[in-house]
Image (cartoon, rainbow, N blue to C red; front, side, top):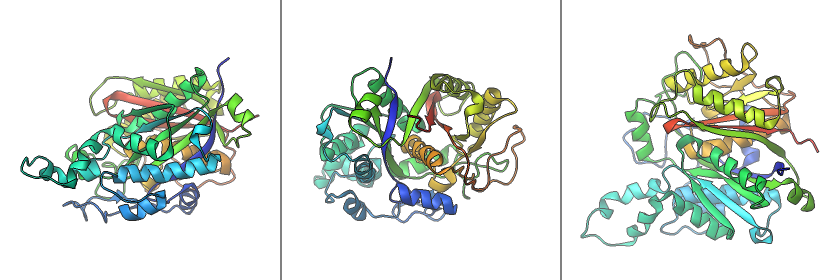
Length: 404
């Protein structure tokens, strides 16, 4: 029988906090991290809201316990800060004390710093330390730098499947544990804001000039964010032998690819429906056992219709309580799946259903509406966390309360 997969550590940094505890407090206080950028040199500085981590790169380096140097990008520094907390929470002082894998996710790697020196890089007459940033554009660069800093040496991989990346990283890590390849894998993702992604999503007309309004009739797009998050996954036998503190169980997962369109999901939510349905079946939970769904909920016109229709197809007239937490953190792309997986664990641990901020009007295409106020003292035993990306990538996780 395949190993059960437990979550035994978590670390994160987002626009609403430098660690898990700060994120939880801001969720409780219903305080959004959205605002305008202090660090990106863009013509949209006072036009397009973003959810930016409130640290310079020098400050991030201090938080991560390292020294700023050329080639160490903001993407890597965010990841190092989140990794440091995840290891501490899991009580891991040496990752080589047991075979430990590292599965990291990013969509554009070190683009945040490479784009600053782009014109120097393409000028053959120029030379200098800026050349150290060329290789950081590879998404695997931040993975390797974090791995080198921490000491991972067993298995290291990078996943880049757009907005489903770190959810897929968690699935990959869980599969390795279940197949007996590794007893412990640390999975998640890191993403920094860049002009490239801001201009790209804006050219697709997918960015809202107001704070985003997921599942609202008046929604006009997303707000980008940045951050990083990692979860420590351990197989049951290892966790018990190690006396690990078990935070929750990853009971089900599935990814699908509907291949409908490069940037738009199936209008009927075919991929999202199949991903949630199969993840729930794997978990062994029935539909009425789901207490909360942390939806992908980007607030783009197409996504929310597609995801909403998938929810109605799967759950009929009994759609569980659901909300998007992207009005808190912005859409952190590759990091979103891991960040929201941690929010799912926090919902279970603290009996909370997080509100879908900025909602005011039901979508005409749907019969359902999200939770709009913080619900406390709720019985939350099973949470579905959705992450859907470009290219028809759909990933759903089922995270459950630990039952010994």
